[in-house]
Image (tube, rainbow over all chains, first blue to last red):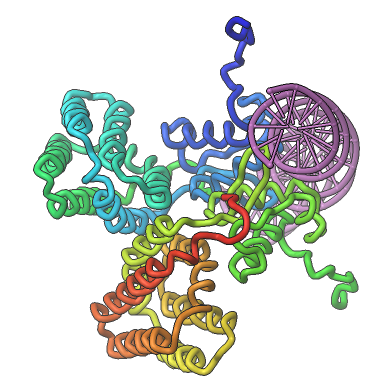
Length: 231
Length: 231
DNA sequence: CTTGTTGAGATTGGATGCAATTGCGGGTAT
DNA sequence: ATACCCGCAATTGCATCCAATCTCAACAAG
């Protein structure tokens, strides 16, 4: 028979619950759902063309990922981190990401290195915050793409996800000087990878994360939310 | 009014889904549900006196915790780790637990230290594997109990949970020599904590985990399962 | 003006029932 | 004997429905 004539409602792959979870996760990471935002089951169900049952399963999943805070009989909110919690995540990342880099580096191809350099370059050329964040994430994820790990890459991705809203808030207010340092660090990382200097790559990653952590700590106002006080 | 006359079915606190999740998690950690075991929704629902809906939510939660592997339209199994994945978890622990120790140590009370020494002593006196594992877990968790962290302690607990079945399998086959080393390491840790030597405490923890990782790697037969081939 | 109370509406939690998919066993052809 | 195919039982996925609980705004008291 010829190709399918099915309209393909654009939302037809995978389970409803996984689809919903992915959608909400995406919304949180992209900033559509900011920290503290209430997530109403019915609203989400309608948004994804499903009933409330798969939505609740998705919320449970995201709760375990740390992206959503569930209060029994009350509701679900996008998780909000305190500065202290955010620093915990960053400190965990400082220790885990160099390890992941160790797994990844040996398997990075010359093609990957070229692409990394391109991403780093593109980051210097954009003014759009969303684009900046997208490129930054793509850059680092690509630098870890050589790692043939399941647990570790998953873990790191999750830590990235939970802190993404604060990276966004922070990115909105950094000055040219700080931005320059970010670019320098990325360039240093690419260089270390190119030279096959694992030690240097690991330390560059660690420093990159540490510096961001300290900058976040210097801007506690990011965490004292202006709107509601939900957690 | 006087105390409630409700029969209290012993399963009456919290949501059904949380209760079920806790129950299954407990079963996996205690070894009741071994890796690879099939988890049938209806069976679990009956076991916990609930319907299948909260069971499914619990399974989703546990999937995100890494304890359960969900295959769409097929079923749920207790997660089975390969040796490589287990080593990933242990390497992550090697980096995260010293950090957690750093948070915890300053807040440990003299009472905690006494209890730690007691737990370490009790471990040398038991022959029962389940008891040994229980004490080991209690020992380490107590050593981290000073940490006023949410993210980090949660993370570490989860990593412990996912590898618990393999610790059990491994404990079943260690000789007196290896067991002696475990006790020595615990004693060293208590000493370091007592002396307030953070550096030493961190390194002892790291070494303790690293040694276990290497011993697990020396017994790959633990991971090649004899029964089914489900993952 | 602030704080506590109360009741209706909104929202979540869970059970049941049905459709969809999978896995498995017997049968058949090679 | 082996590989393949088909059909039924078992199991999962999901929508709907009802009960339980919370939210919130209006109101009253201090």
